[in-house]
Amino acid sequence: MTGKLYIGTNTKMFQTGTEAETYIRKMDDLIDDIRDRLEFFFIPSFTSLERSVRAVGDRIRIGAQNMAWEDRGQFTGEVSPLMLEEIGVRFVLIGHSERRHVFGETDGMEAAKVRLAADHGFTVLLCVGETAEQKDAGRSIQAVREQLEKAAGVLGPEEARERLWIGYEPVWAIGTSGVPASASYAEDMHGAIKGVLRQMFDGDGAEIPVLYGGSVNASNAPEIIARDGIDGLFIGRSAWDPDRFNGIIRSVLPVFESRASKQL
Ligand code: PGA
Image (cartoon, rainbow, N blue to C red; front, side):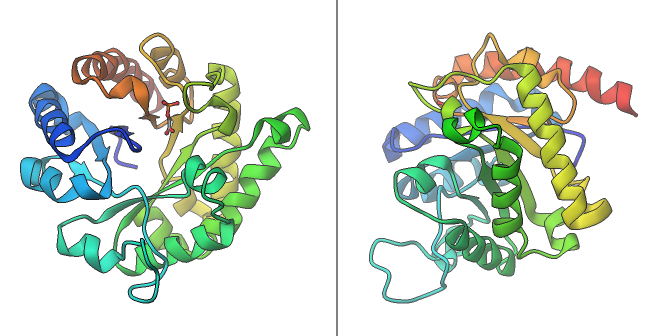
């Protein structure tokens, strides 16, 4: 962890290339005076990646929403890390809930992608989160533990510390039909995830940032970020208007920094 606030958005299948470029240019201007205090990232569609990288260079970390688990092969419709590297993308989202639950990706697939991404020196934002059924059955921690052990267990401690970020996104909290987790529930789950990461990677595991996502908005963001173990926010639809997103960032940054300073 860098001591900075981890914050960014995945635009899912919502912005065209033109829209993504306009958006990220505006965000680039809006966060200019605070960018050194942020680990800010933007994860647009594949077709928007190259123009986003051109628009903001290395001032903003640009990531892909998905990646194949092989460098090359007979995988129609997939995108290889070689193709991402070629256009300057070295950050990738793996295992987002929509990939798992809409497209049927398994922990085994996520593991292969995580391994290959690390082989290419990419930073990986690996998403985990329990379903409503798992939560109701009291198996939330067990579910995320399994996801972490299977998908991130392919990494050694050092590469996990250097390359792995975790997005904790309860499936029931994501999207228009989602109900945001309470701040205390998110805090408990982050504590459990951090415990699993420490078991998996010893002291290196304590350095892996864990971001919360799932219906984060202007009203719940400050109370969520005030909680221990929440190193950042991974926001969907409330981040797609630049001014609104900038407002959220500015409301949570002092809360995050005052919490971080107390922990020193
Ligand atoms: P949401 O999306 O903020 O719109 O719920 C979060 C996500 O899917 O990462």
